[in-house]
Length: 142
Image 1 (cartoon, rainbow, N blue to C red):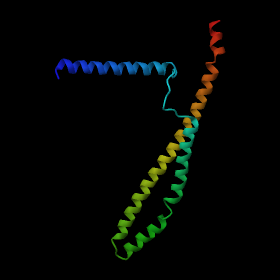
Image 2 (spheres, one colour; image 1 turned 180 degrees about the horizontal axis):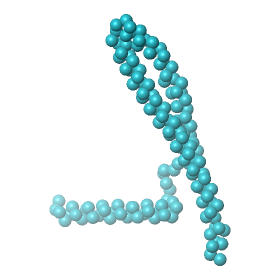
Image 3 (cartoon, helix red, strand yellow; image 1 turned 90 degrees about the vertical axis):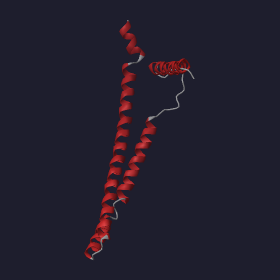
Image 4 (cartoon, one colour; image 1 turned 120 degrees about the horizontal axis):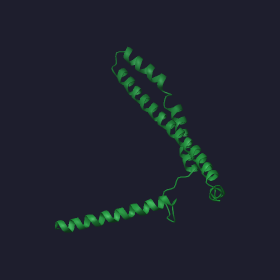
């Protein structure tokens, strides 16, 4: 393929991408236009994911650490009896605890963020409806 052919193809692809970008920008500027979006997220969707994260948090909080005291005792007993596996058991437990705490923190963060998103979105919608009603806009043009 010659340079001119490759250059022509590249220009054609760029023009197609630019046209698609302009169409997307126009759609976004018009508030969605007539296009059907396959990606929508509603407040109930966000709330459901947040609730799932909270449920996971509570189950993990209860179940992840129930063996901690017994693991500590077993590791200490093994060390006392001269077994090197006591230290290994403690290292494994410490790693498990650390990873579980990170997962708990992530679940809490997801839940809190999505709850806040739902509340903030509802407040923004209320403000938009109140401030941008047709009557409100009309009175500025009379």
